[in-house]
Length: 408
Image (cartoon, rainbow, N blue to C red; front, side):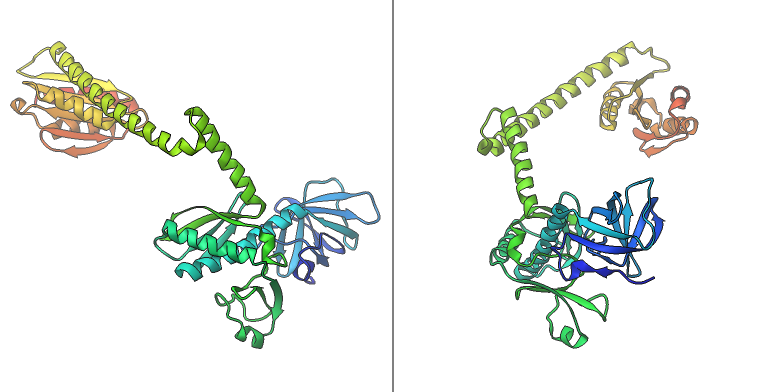
């Protein structure tokens, strides 16, 4: 099959064109057309595919293009489901969704510029790039990135945008390629397309870009985080900067209104709220501990003594393992106290604690329960814990542990 002539290489601003259908097939459950020429950009190089429409030039048929893919040089246009399919040899008119195309041009060119900025300001090269519907990310081959470094790169990038540098995309010969200071070696050796942004960046790239850097508008870094030994930087360009600003402004003002402060006072108000919450959490934890101590003493007192031992069993489904240990220890601090305390809503957890005067090994008691439960555990003679297994067997497991504790 003949390769598709890619019109966007020469003119990324072309939004309407005519072509001929050279093949019809089904791809990814969609009817798909291969054209002899196309201005649609197929997904690749980190840039999503264009979308738009194809129309029959001699009949009232119009199909929505929902995806575009390249296969061995042939560009396939995947269509929304339709009862009427185009036929091979049919003449069609293509129309690009310009708003989407220009957005991708802004983001992709902005990525080239920000990548150059991180190299220039902190020697942090880009390893990969991804353009999504909301933002753009690049992964930098560094372990750390400071706020100052990010802001320096962002400022450098925006200065390059506002210089309105020429953006030149062209195919170069091997001889010319040797003379161009590419940011990194190209993946292929022949038919290499180079995108140059003034004198700040030269990169092998098949994507769509504006004619001048000024059309990127602005570049704003939204955040960064460690990802698999690298730093992932999230950012937006052009129209997306305004959208991100509005989104964050709305969230900031809503939070400020909830706290009855002005948006500029929000950081201080949040800090005060965190301090108050931490104090309340400490107070709540202390109160919980005191209540658990009273509860443990009450359970101990209500448990009949047998052979100098009081074996207290209880199930607290919502208690954390820390609370289970705390309550068990309170009981085991009392003369003859043996605690078998279980909890956990999704995964069974069991704590066994024994007073030294009982001469009972908590590990042995726990082991008797784990055999029935089908779980695992361990610990020391005075305190052991375990979990897992079948929750439905918990009652039988507690009975087995009680039996072991009473004869230990």
